[in-house]
Image (cartoon, rainbow over the protein chains, first blue to last red):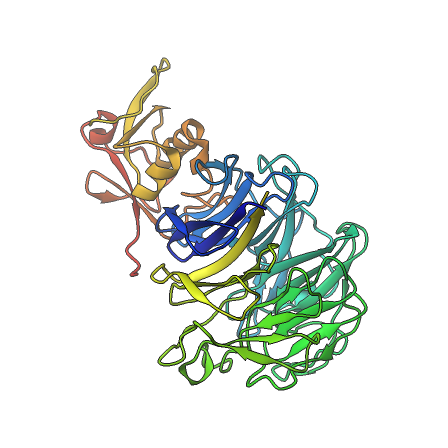
Length: 371
Length: 112
C-alpha cells in the first residue's frame, strides 16, 4: 500500500490531503468547489481514482461532481433527485405536516464492485442510486414510502439519511440511519424495509422505546464481522450483535455518551472510536479538551486518547461523517473538527497530530488507502 | 463583454446577454457574460430555458428541479426592474431585447 488520500468536505469547499504510508508529510490541495458546502466525498474501492462529491448550498441547490483522475479534474453530473411518484408529508419541528422536499445529498456510497454504481442518502430522507456513474439517479422508493415515514420528524440538521451500511457479504442487505427516524433494514436491495431500533431508548420521544423516531447519529461495522454494528445515538453508544435487529448500550465509562461520529479499527473488530460531546445543548467537547475515546473490548470500557490533541481551551465538535480510518498497518484514524482542523493518528489512536489547522468547518472526512 | 459565450444565431431569435452569479459561471465553465439565443416572446423563463439548454450543468441551480419554481435565493433584474416574480407572460424590456442591457441573475444577500 503506497499511501492515503483523505477527502475532506467543509462548509466552504473540499480539500484533498495526501501522504505516503508513513502519514507524516502531507500535501494539501484545494479548495475544490470553493464557497459551496461539501457534505460528503467518497471514492470507489475498485477504481480509487473515481471520486464523487456532494456540492450544495442554499442559493443554488445540489450539484454532484465526479472525478476520474483522483480529484485533479471534476465534472458536474446529474443533479436530478426527484422522488418517485407521490410524496407525502412528515412532521415539521412544530408537529405540523410538511411535504417531502429534496434539499441535499448527505452521503455517497460507491459500490464495492462497480465504480459507476453509487447510493446516495438525501434530505428529506430517501435513498437514490446511480448505475451510470452519476449520469442519472433513481430513487429506491420503498424506503420513503414505508408505513412509518409519515411519522419521521427532522433532527436539528434536517430529515436526513446520512448513513448507508451494506453487509460486506451480502450487499442487498443494508442498514440505513435517518435523523430522526432511526435505523431501517432491507434484505432485498432496498425494495422493502423494516425498522431496526429494538433496544433504543430516546427520552425526547413521547414513547421513548417506540419502533421509529430515534435520532441515530452514525453506524459503524467491521467487514469481517457484519453482524456486529456499533451506533452513536443522539445520547448513548449502542451495539448490536444480530445485524441491527436488537441493540444494547455500551456507553460504559464514557464521560458523556452524546456524540456524532463512531468508527471501527480496520484490523481489530473490537476496537471502536467515538468523540464524546458535552451534550445536545452544548455541541462541543467537554472541559475544553478534544479527546477521542477508544474501546478495545467492543464497548463498555473506554480510554481517552489525548496525546497530540488540544487539551485546553478547545470547543470544537466532530460531526457525524468527520471520522474515518485507513487500512494501513498500523491503522490510521482521522477526525475533522468544526474548527477546521483535521487530525491524524497513524498508530491507531496512540499519538495524534494536525494535518491542517485552519480549514473551514469540517463536515466530512473519508480516507482512501491507495494501492 | 470579453469572454462572451455565443453560438451561431438560429433564425428568428434574439441574442440575450445574461449576467450569471460567479458560482454558476464556475459551474458552467464560462467567464464574463453569457449570451443565449431566445425566440420571442423573450421572457425570463424562456431565457432560463435557453441558458440551461446551453449549459446543462446549471439545471436545478436557478429553479427547482421538482417544481420548476425560481429558487428562493435567486433574484432576477432587467434594466433596473425586478423580474423575480415575472417569469412568464411578460416580455423583457427593450434594452435587454436590443442587447443594451443584460438580464441579471443575482444571488440574494443572505449574510455569511
